[in-house]
Image 1 (cartoon, rainbow, N blue to C red):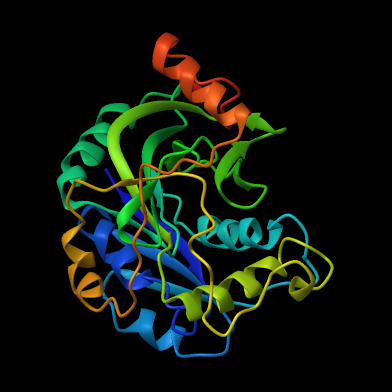
Image 2 (cartoon, rainbow, N blue to C red; image 1 turned 60 degrees about the vertical axis):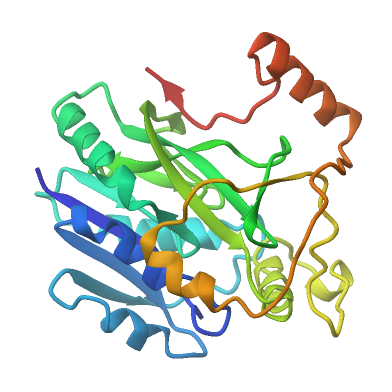
Length: 290
């Protein structure tokens, strides 16, 4: 079995993406790793070059700055990396620049890839998600956070990144057929110094909306306001080992009263239905579980 990791990244230093941790977290079960490094404003290329030259293959790209709606530029960059995976590879393991896999889950993932490698009915593997917010101590627990997504796919070049690169589809807009696995993606996209978070938020916004980001985002000297969140819970697990040094470097304080829930009636209804029926009403599913 041959596994190739793949991702895209740009301005990782400027916006403090844990891209090194992301790549190194899954590198032990990858035979090769393709990174599409976009031309940016910092030393991201050098950062990637220093990780593991024996395994990592870099393709340098230029982002299409005209794609300023719906985050489609992220999908285009993802596709560049995926298309660069060699034909002899069985699986592509996708990881974004703010996602990390816990080392305890690597054997589970590898076993699942081996199990369904030759099963033509399986297009990919579905992961659980843990979304951190504000600091490394809190996780989002409202229905606005997506709970599952595809991160391992067959090396089928008819598969492509969908919309804003959250998931994948194939052929004529078909959802992938996937097997759920008991492994999680630790998503750290909402954990940064508030000043850096504000800069990142402004930058990302320009690839979602054609008008100016500043018209929609309140800019503050103190940085991003993490207090504007509907519901959080305390994280009681352990972080991946590759994240420990970054966690120790946290230089801002964030606390939240988890008993305070500012949920809409729609979200309260969804949570109530899930609790008493097990049905998660209206959950977005960009996949078919088989």
